[in-house]
Amino acid sequence: MVKKQTRLEVVREMPPLRHSIPGEPFRMENSEVVKWLLRQPEVLQYLFDKAKVYLVYDAATGTWRGTKA
Image (cartoon, rainbow, N blue to C red; front, side):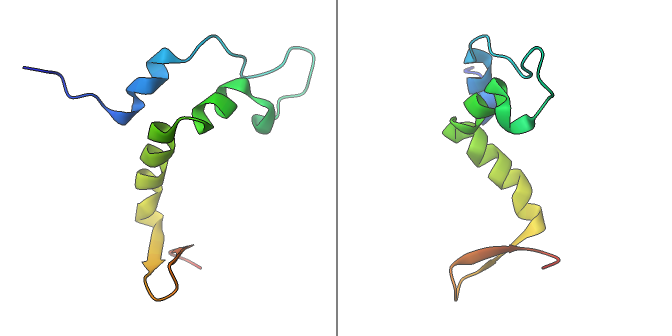
């Protein structure tokens, strides 16, 4: 039996990266790890699929919005 590969399996291939820069205050937008993750289509699709429970699609306008918007 072949093991089903998940969309997050790509994370196993991440090279050594820094999440914080020594000597600098932590800022998420400067994280090498986060930048790498955001360049992975599989990770982005996984996050979008998880976020969809809080989103509503309007077919008439072709837009998404938060459920409380």
